Length: 284
Image (cartoon, rainbow, N blue to C red; front, side, top):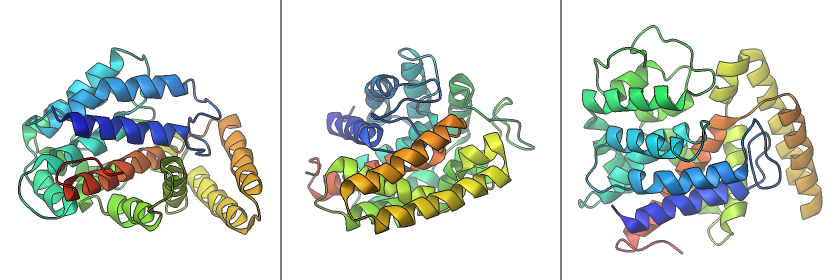
């Protein structure tokens, strides 16, 4: 196990849950039957498995979900684990090159065994709004490699789309935002990255659970809230807009969970880039 990578994973999960993320669980307001403590315990339990050196992607995902389920009785982190396992594998590679390039090699090498383990993990986590798929359904045996299976779900699941597209959203939106805020504290960066994803496209967790119309309405409102936040003259004023939006989403039971998962993956990728650039040492 890479202790440094595990520590980075816990750090970014902690930063994300401390950030004021409208509609999602955070330190300022629990929601959706989950608490901040649930997420912190989940991160600590999953970290050693995500960072288990030389383990395959599917094995990391499954073992991390199993570890999570040993400490909480709800799905706190499936999307995070699906996204972060390949990143951790890429960071371990000894070849030179950008993290995103090494990630492409990891995704290209995924197997049917990875798919089988990931399917088992998804069923164990039992995410909300999972539904049934016309092909490569997780309730059946895996017959294709994990990337191919994810590609079949890309139109309805933004996390699956990352596997198909080489984590384009993670790097082009999330990591790019984090880079632009170099020097800012981790929580401020997490809030900014989350807002980038919340306003970039309809959240696929909302899409699955509530449908296209509501997902589009949340996207539109998020963009208006972002405009209000940018126009506010004080930090208190900016946060007030976010708190009001947060309360409204939670009142209606709407959780932009995919935006939160993409935020963690982006923060993890950003920190891993610095870790590798510093010769394996964590980025400050």
